[in-house]
Amino acid sequence: MISQRLKRVVLEELGLDGFEMTSSTMASQVPGWDSLAHLRVLAAVEKEYNIRFTSLEVIPLKNVGDLQLLVDKKIRNRSPVS
Image (cartoon, rainbow, N blue to C red; front, side, top):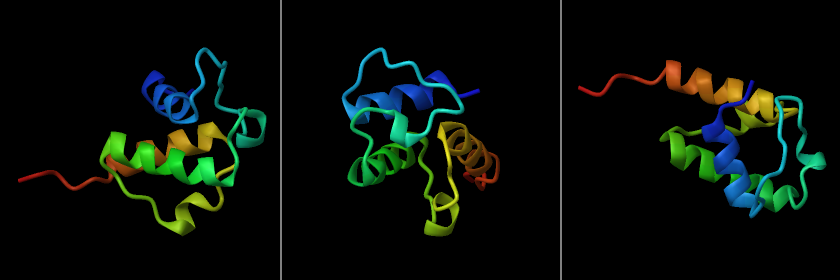
């Protein structure tokens, strides 16, 4: 299941409103989500969640659900601020 927060970030970055997105939604199924938009989406997600992705982490992503799992993992593994 994808969070409303992630869905909002993705749809705002793509300039879409009301697009139905599920965990199994692939970039190719979303209007305007091409290779350049993909980079913008990833940057927007990094900014929203204050995380950073590596190339090796994002290459295997197949759908929005995979992106959500990666975001969740990054948040869980984030070092606590002292």
